[in-house]
Image (cartoon, rainbow, N blue to C red; front, side, top):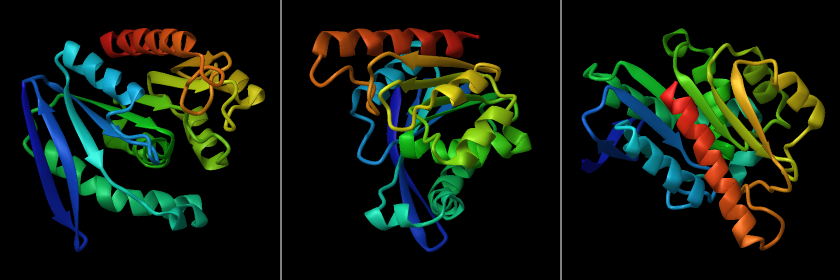
Length: 213
């Protein structure tokens, strides 16, 4: 396994990323949440799952201030894609990968739903959406209309959870998992450690199933 910290310069800015290479033909691009970084449980164990399956990984390193949320969703997406697009191009330019997976948490689901799910070149990519921001109607509609395979996980105590939306999303190609009593971090209750670990384990089992398809 080779772990390299890299950067790419475009649009008069520099974006850092970490490339974990195992010699695989599949690459998983991971997009962190706002404050939910790659050392947090969902990303730590998702990374471990990819390594277990000999899937190469890219962790995108970006950071935005609170002003980002004052913008319309399309502007948020454009801001993020200025950082993300050069990295995707840099990693894929040599053509060593046959398949792509996109995995995001919260903020990181915005570019997946609002960009990658709409691009023809990624029609066969698998999409992994942890706690997507479904209160943004554009996000919900994009996921609902998508033909992608993948996984969507959200807790029923998440402020972005809506039962009616879940019923509609059950008809999508995505495997939809609702975690009972889980919040936006997919933690159970306030401090239910054991239950939170069990829930995390179940999520990783679902991720493994989707990756293995």
